[in-house]
Figure 1 (cartoon, rainbow, N blue to C red):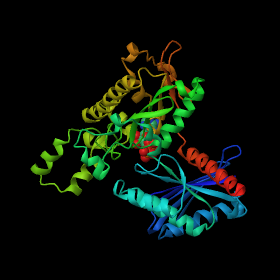
Figure 2 (figure 1 turned 90 degrees about the vertical axis):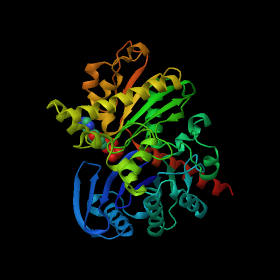
Figure 3 (figure 1 turned 60 degrees about the vertical axis):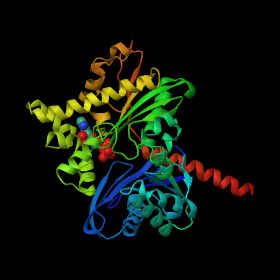
Figure 4 (figure 1 turned 45 degrees about the horizontal axis):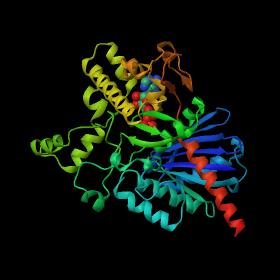
Length: 406
Ligand code: ADP
């Protein structure tokens, strides 16, 4: 069974085609800068060959048609015909309170996702557009929605209700939702396999550190708390997002500098975090180099990032009452030995012992704790697309079975 995984942004479409029998990725690619004459289509084949083309692509329909043409291009040797795609799995960022698991998309699901636009105005419209386009271009192929928020539905009220008048929860559904759910789920499931313990008894802390970062406390295989909240702005210090701040600061700055809501939102999401503090970049690699050159603001930005991460790890050690393992994933979590080492420095008293040599020699999935460490430490490369493909295949198989039984 071949599953096409689509992740649609406002001007991009990322995709992977996965053969589910042995979970082989047949191809992956991305169309970027949709809406102009110089859109870029890059893709990679199973044999590692990669291609980059520039096209005039004015909308997502054209982008998807281009992708489908590449999938059936005889030179690429991927598919003979589009009918070999059994289903399409879509990443949808916000599923609100409604979606606690992945679902097959029908009109009512579309309407519910539309209702969540208010909660994720930057992401859900593009995700919806992706579903619409895919339905149009591949009629009769089942479409499945997989939500970033779904994994965090197991959080207890005490973790998701804010200290605001309760009426804002009932009236506007203001609560912690959490994001990066498919990534936290994937690495936690892998960690459970590596630990060799039953899921029901496993306690984990998973750190997804990329441009956007979040950390999740997991008990019995279920998310019990996570650092991102009502939006993906809360929590850890990120590339360009502030993470936790005193909300009164906003009222103060908005009054002092006469900032509009739009400007304030942009300041918090695009001009804060590592970029805002360093005044240089949001890229950890560049900041690390600047720190070697004794740049004080680059050093400060990295210090704040690792300090906050350490604070959250310690806090979640309390939430799960002692973790079996801590997992690092995503661009920074998988690649920066420096960030991992600084975030865990001095935590030996909690049974967390990093093997510094192993930490510097990470390659793919790697255990980086010492032999005697009570808490295992892993680097596990994330694979959100595989989670989406697995859910999609499972749902489609169930649907087929149900139809046959009827
Ligand atoms: P996104 O949230 O956009 O998916 P990624 O998970 O791809 O982000 O992570 C991107 C970040 O990973 C970059 O901003 C960069 O700081 C960091 N990164 C990538 N490679 C390295 C590396 N070798 N060392 C340190 N940081 C890295």
